[in-house]
Amino acid sequence: MKKNRKANKILALYVLWLLLVFLYPFHSESGIYQPENQVKCKNCQKTIHGRIIQVNKYNYHPECFICEKCGETLSGEFVKDGIKKYHPICYKMAKGLECAHCGKLLGDKWMVYENNKYHNNCMDDYIDTIRPHCNICGKIIDGQYTKDENGSYHTSCYKRKILPKCSVCISPIENKFFVDAWGNKTHENHGGKPVNYCSSCMRVVSDKTSNGMYEYSDGRIICGYCVLDAIDGPESISESMDKVIDILQTIGISDSHSNVPVHLVDKKYLKKKSKQKFNDKAKGFTHCKTTYLNGKTAFLKQNIYILSGLPELEFKGVLAHEIIHTWLNKHQVKMSDNDIEGFCNLGTMRIYEEEGSEFAQVLLKSMEKDPDPGYGKAYRRMKIELEKIGWQSLIKRIKNK
Image 1 (cartoon, rainbow, N blue to C red):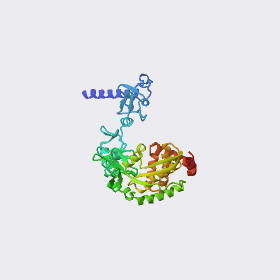
Image 2 (image 1 turned 180 degrees about the vertical axis):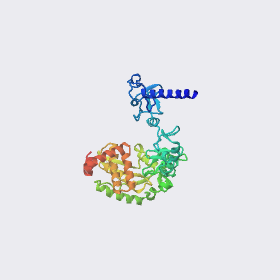
Image 3 (image 1 turned 30 degrees about the vertical axis):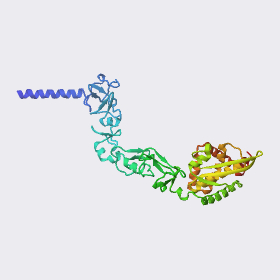
Image 4 (image 1 turned 120 degrees about the vertical axis):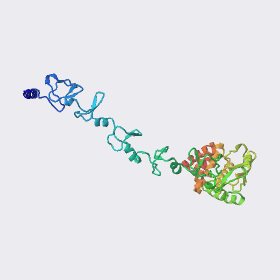
């Protein structure tokens, strides 16, 4: 009897299940279907026909419950960011949670280097491609380093290969430095002592740059190269005088006096003879004494004074300058002091141009940069005039002044 009751109960439940299946056929992948007139989409508020996605008691059309990045329907686990929803993988991609080296998505932990994210193993395995390398030795740079527009360097490599070297001590120059007329670079000082330069060729003096140096009694310093052909006696004066007169004759200074005495003196004596006309840079001076008779020049006595110990080329340049002074005095040319010095410097220029050596080019560049109103500015003005009208016309104009 009991077995019949139990069998009848099971049968009744089975019949009830069949009725439910046939009367309410609303199952889907999401697991739930409900009558059409009772279900509305949380997103669009329209009635849902067919498959339903239910999340936290809210219902959605499948096409209304999609990933913000890929646009595909969300199912299973998803990430919510405000009102936006993502697949877990799409969320990481949207937020840039990808390894900067391998491009794959990052896990829960990662490392950051220079604002880029990396897998821990990528940071370790590919460190060579992430950290800076020295442009000189090619090795990885640890700690502080030096960087310029061309790349990164170990500080030691940069000092050894990139920084300029002092021509005197050969050590790298890290701060302010000087460059002489010959391209030699040097520290401001060495052991607290200032750098010395040759008073003639302007080269920094040292055993390495100038074959040593010599100091004259008047305090002038001359390098080991310039002292080799320094003018120090009557014989060398005579040879230089002949060469200078020959060159000046080619430009029209043909009646200059080769018999004007030339005296070699020190700086102190030169200053004494030139008096108020002394220029600290001057290396020569022409003294002229005129005797008048009845208002006319009766006698003209001239003497040329030039610093002793000048190298031959510089001596000839100074001599040409002073010989033109004697020529101007003979022709009683009246010009301003600055114009006189500027015109006389054209003779010096001609000597250096004729020589054409590297030393001559250094001396010519120095004249171009000289700020002195006579030796510099007036000279450059006269040079422009010479380039326009030539030697013959310029000399004629000067004689008529």
